[in-house]
View 1: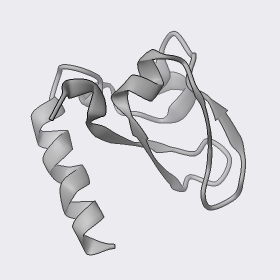
View 2: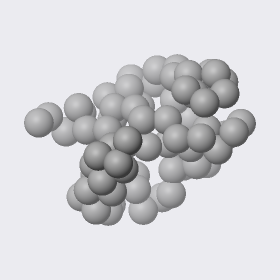
View 3: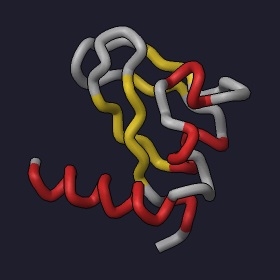
View 4: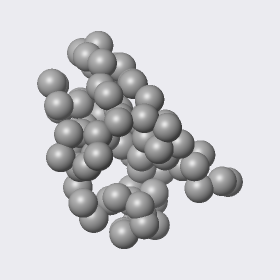
Length: 78
């Protein structure tokens, strides 16, 4: 699987719900809609961890392997 196709979970700043996005969506500065509250979230922030609630340890490439495993576990639970 290509690195850009990896899923990451971001937190909705409005409802704190989880939004699953591809790394490519973040790097291409897409806007995503929260599945819980419907809020639109702009992924074009210079520091995504500040705007979207991504812990700095989860930003590429620092801690990415552990985070991908965590996302896969969450996806399997659903």
